[in-house]
Image (cartoon, rainbow, N blue to C red; front, side, top):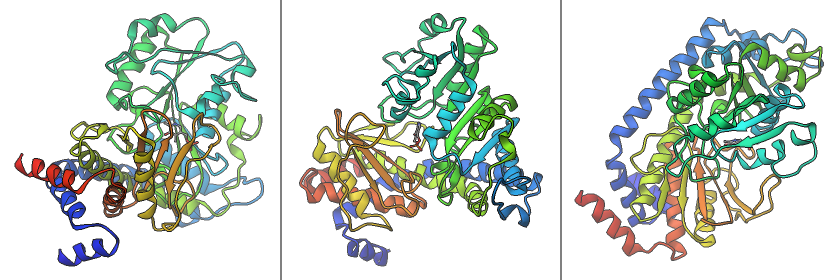
Length: 440
Ligand SMILES: *Cc1c(COP(=O)(O)O)cnc(C)c1O
């Protein structure tokens, strides 16, 4: 134990920050056991899907050129379909990121004259340009697809009355974002997503329900596709890539929806038949295999961060006790300085580029400057320890990831140290917070 403490000291963590962290951890044993139990179930789910599809050594090789008869690619898509309990899946390195996967799912399943509905409020920032909420070249709006939105009620619940009123003749596709993204609304549980889909399907059975599953995969035992979603969509440099996938996205769902997406990704007539996997498949397979435990590590980090900062008096979403439905932790600092200090600490904790200082910049797709801390093996990967904060009120940071729990823990302590070093959090307030916790 003393050796570990010394190691923390050598890495710049002061005694009071280290001890405060351990007091917080004392209270989290049961939470962590429950997270491990979910990971155990999901590990077996993935293993079963791989065994049933007879993943073989030949699947780990890749194709070049057109990529006809790519056994590994086709088998991996069958494995994803099995895990998500869907008819089919599209899992490709040619899908460049999460936004691309979502844009692909939307653009391939909507036609001019159709209407898209978001019954859970404003979607993720980058989707505003995909949809055309902010005018943008090539948006759905330019192709004559209209958009409607129903916000969540003040308390975070669904506005069923207005959702009913918003579903009309033209409504073709409903997009439901599971994770909070850059907002402070609660993340939706799979159970709540199921209730919403059931409500919508009762009004209009043939409407396509798509779930933006980013950051949600393997957090629970069920996925949105288990409760009625026609499509689930996500990024491989988040949870399902397990930290090993260097690029990629997936769409799992109804055969027709996935087929539409494949024809859009490659070409009408070609669809899933082309798309060489190059040399990337062993990372896709191994990453998917590791994803349940990597997600569990990130989840422990999020729960730890919530408790560390909540107990110091900062507003956190979700709070320290709430059940979790994604791996994101929001902490509100209320000032740009707090956001920046936090991100500097996360950067300083990284295995790659720990010596650089992150700065706010005008990131494409976002409407305010964003500061990002990411010292990742895969550039921009947010299943690895990372944090980002838009420089706008309420000045909240969104923390996520950690390929191992031990690294997530270190990153959070390092972020707190950074706030202490800048005088934003005082040593006295840490002592006080520690005593408050011990007294309970
Ligand atoms: C990350 C994310 C996206 C976009 O993914 P990128 O890979 O960053 O393009 C979309 N929706 C949600 C909820 C996300 O978290």
